Image 1 (spheres, rainbow, N blue to C red):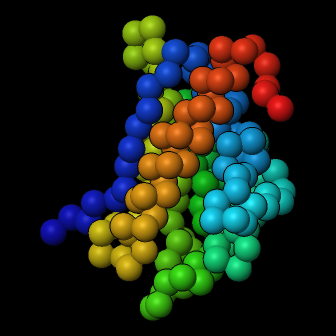
Image 2 (image 1 turned 90 degrees about the horizontal axis):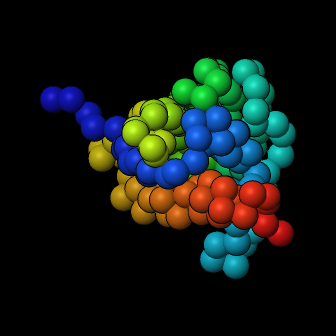
Length: 156
């Protein structure tokens, strides 16, 4: 029986290069307030071997390393350490998983396919993580790409 990794996609009118650059600007699309807590970003997220940390209070901690960067095509993060305090059993469930961003030209549009390899339905955190990944990719990253593109500059 094959385990199904979480995957989702978005389609935008931005170029491959724009989508690639927006993905790598993690602090601009992932750092948000949720449940009254602001996410903190520390490190770098744009070139091979860069490392960064995302911390959301004492609820979420994850350290990421860029292990594959193919300009305008693909970005892969390896989670080298994690602590999800709201999980009862395996609080390090994300450690060793990969976040894969694949960018594909699709006529006049660009498709971004996101896969969290290792986030499978058998994990205690799966349903909760799916809910938040849908929000992070389909809202936060989507809006970061499309609002920047429409305005031609970053919004404040």
